[in-house]
Image 1 (cartoon, rainbow, N blue to C red):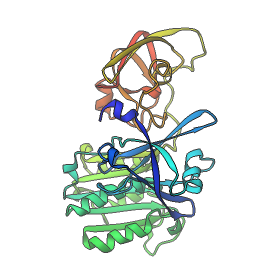
Image 2: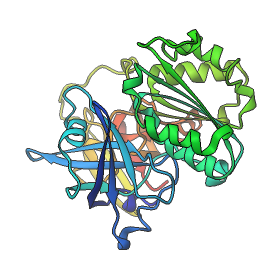
Image 3: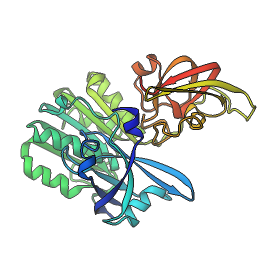
Image 4: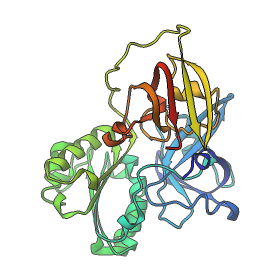
Length: 356
């Protein structure tokens, strides 16, 4: 997908708002015929929504929870003081319009990966949203899915009815395991958090990790890290493990530089986007993304927290200090890719290529 496509927002009409729990809802959008090609999505992709409040632009990224070929739908759980989540869960109604960016994201493999085979999905809370799209596509293609889904209580399970319908429809193709942290289950193994110990027991008994072709992880940072460690210990190849963070519940990694005070010092930064080049002196105390916004207002971004990977670019000249990274693989970093929302320019000149 080109950078220009990623930067486009379209006013889509809300088709349906379906309450899922007391604090969560699924929002489905209508896509007009002339935008059908742009909004065609593959399992694992996400939508970035935009809202302007008191003159300030806010963006949030939500994974698509619909099967490929259907209208785009996102699942949203309200968070305390959440500007976007409260609006979507409590205030948005069918017929309203929302600014939506065309589908994107990095939690989506070659579609051939989803055509059959055995897949293990591990989700917690609202991390179920991309799993629905992945699981539905695998099941429809004749594959097998095991879903380990962690929540606080049975009442907080998002898409509970839809998961039950999938189980009824596909029977033995789908193994569905609910793990509840604040509600006792008949089986002790299914009562508690999806931490490293419980995951190890689950992945050596109920769902032996070695029996799957691909593993999909989505949820809080701690669960993702525990699951990746357990899977590696059990011999699952790293290339077979796909993950996406919904939020980061751990503090940022230790900073590699002292917080910069405004000093007037600048670095000549060149940005390449959609084949066009722009150069300007940018402050060293601003991230490349924020600083370069004076040159290009269409730079791609969503979370600005080092999680989504939307602002990924390649440093082709000079150096930057990337403070936080929860989106890029080590091979990408070694190849020179950075998250521009977390990268501060160093030296005299820096060039970042969003087209790379």
